[in-house]
Length: 170
Image (cartoon, rainbow, N blue to C red):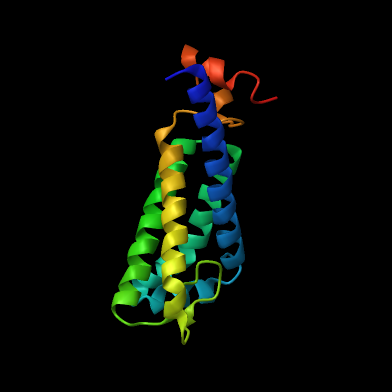
């Protein structure tokens, strides 16, 4: 790949990293102070036993915040993007599952959750949003480096990467 192509990919990775990280920070931030609502949102999917749904409901906002912060700062970026991709894949499966079973719930993606009449009309949008963010996460996970990442300072770069990220972080 040419230097221009690598540079464009590094910038695309930055945008994907910041957008996805920002979504995780907002989602986790809105839920972290409301563990009961988060637990209820997980239970509404009717996919996990009650005790496991409670553990997931409590842990998920913290995981979302940690993944979001790692992506925005650009530290352990590939691992954070891989976790992000797994979470988005799980959310797509969850939303598809309730849709297929005729269950109407607020997804709880940004707080709230639970039964909601007419919610099925939002499922296609929610799946499309999560699919786009899944693709963005996969892009970031596939790149060794993106622009303006802390990883570029913490870990040694290959010579061809140095040329595309030089001057990217001040």
